[in-house]
Image 1 (cartoon, rainbow, N blue to C red):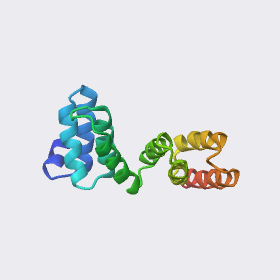
Image 2 (image 1 turned 45 degrees about the vertical axis):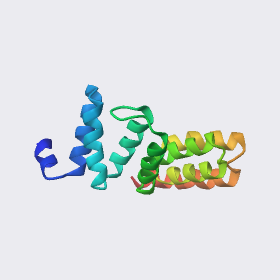
Image 3 (image 1 turned 180 degrees about the vertical axis):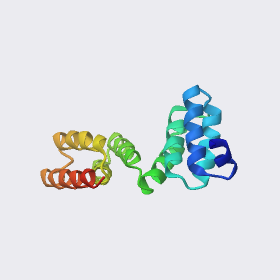
Image 4 (image 1 turned 90 degrees about the horizontal axis):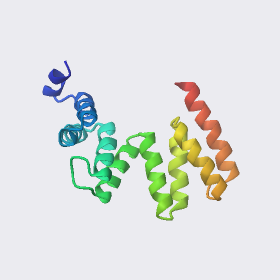
Length: 145
């Protein structure tokens, strides 16, 4: 059934096929399915492409392209992409941007971002007030799902 959906350009079916190919170790096919799904606008596929470019699976390793796809996924509402951008921003010394990405991810219900926010609080680039407000927003997002 997934192949029928792929034939009619269903980006979610393509993305899922990309994941299946990745699990089988066929990174080239995973890349191709994810690329097509991303071209059709599926945010999860951009997140997948970011990882493929980051790790060099099925495509030459390319940090700049990985960051681009991570940004597209984050803008599209993918909370894990926001966490990855926060990690990148922290590594490059952009601590305020890192904190903003984490806050956005937490308000989308990302549990992973809470761990990173606590880390940011301990390191001093997330304020106590921001942490408290974000924890409340995170809980509200979790309660809403």
